[in-house]
Image 1: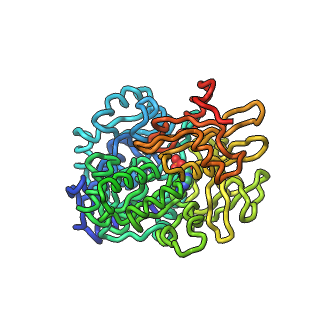
Image 2: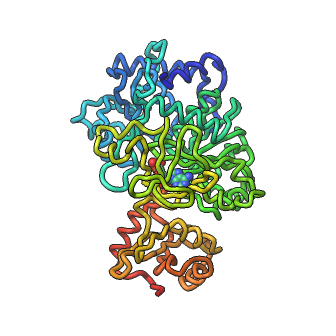
Image 3: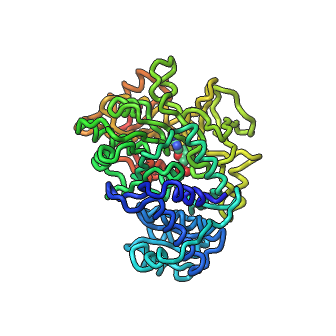
Length: 516
Ligand code: AMP
């Protein structure tokens, strides 16, 4: 079934419910939202030749029109190619060509350049701001969404790809169904009074939260800033109430710091779903202490969006459990639509307590990589998606992520998991942020080095950090060198770029100070 059917249904059963808001200002009801999508569908198919399965690329910052374009494309049976707006137009043009998009919808600031860059491709670029879009909205509504099956493509999402070109992850209508239904079971309930706040890029995971909110006739709010501004979020919470949002751990941290300095308690924010990168135990404890029982964790990846594991609100808050803190450091339990296993290098499943690569299978797992059978075959083997993450399951089924497999440091033949060292360093009161990587070493293969950002107004010394590590951790795991830096390099989604740190390390002959 076509996911566009969900909007059509809500448009009929809750026509007057507010659907789209810019900040606190309502801009469309559900009947208007559904009507607009049906009109865009006609324009895409009749004027621009979007036949079922054909791609529509979207290159624009967060805006309410984003949702109209998504549903318009699906209504027409098309496939959305969401492009991270922070990518350079050249990178966007590469994705447009690779996906074979026939239509590109871009914002006022970039459509001319995209048109120029893709002039050789068979794609028409339309502006969301000018007459192009207004014209689309004036087309006659297409009465019914084009029929789509479980394995028909809906969302062609390009992975951030730290090396080489990104790969297009093929997400089907069936994948979205599974992910959406599991959300209600494993992550959070959604009520008609709720508001999904898009403070993270809609081109990425945050955009996928629309489905649950469309199904429940809840509101969709694009902040005026179009992105993440802690003060704005806290104020929208108070004004709109029942706000839910996705936030990467770095965003949670900034929100909590801001709330702490303002004495805010997060009133009106119902749920903050965090994930997309490691949330350190010290940080989530801080977050709960400041903002209360508002947090739910998910673990997913583009290849199995949102739906590998979840750590529910109740589990985040269950301080009475003897292993509560251990669980807080985990990513929770397999969601109800998937099986999760830990595989050894030989591909055999490992028992609880043993570390290996996390594998997952089930209905939300991608169809494969777009026009890339080699990458697909090496990632999906015997029905299991190999996530590239290393982790361990406990006897109760809680999964703890240690690292990306490529980030594991092998020193003197022993595996050292950077996350473990990072968790320890973060417990030092003067440490704000940290990232641990391996540095090639002639004697040990690799040695552990740490990049450390001090908390504002605080000073850390290498000797102090070394003492701190020695008091809690095996000697061999402790960093052999520290780099005190003002900030860590992060990608557009706030993830620390370990590849950039490795490159920096390669350029620096000797660290600022060494601790032997
Ligand atoms: P992406 O495909 O860009 O969404 O990145 C997915 C990757 O982010 C995963 O493979 C993990 O390495 C990481 N990730 C996602 N969720 C979590 C989480 N809750 N905790 C730690 N890492 C996570």
